[in-house]
Image (cartoon, rainbow, N blue to C red):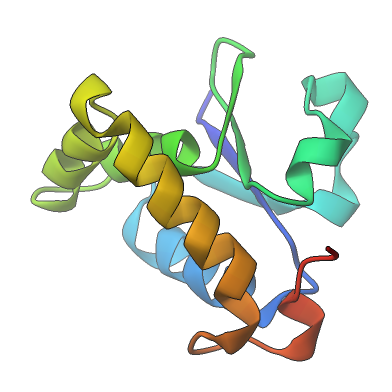
Length: 120
């Protein structure tokens, strides 16, 4: 079983980046949050409003920058090395901060639309 990345299909920014994952990281499956049973996958619906979840093959779920670290580790080199660095203990705090900033501003980033805006 492949890791499963879940994305917000209503957000142009998210859809754009998950498209990159689909093209470049064949080791990761993707699905829209709207088309899966979150409870059956063990995904917290409240967290999906702020962070992208990734369901690992063992059934555990990681969110946000840790989800992206797993996705990048499944990619071919050199992106896999970035995943190792991003998921390292040393970078936990700054990586979480950068992810949070991107999530809050995704409606202003390339590919973003007003639908990408997070509710305050």
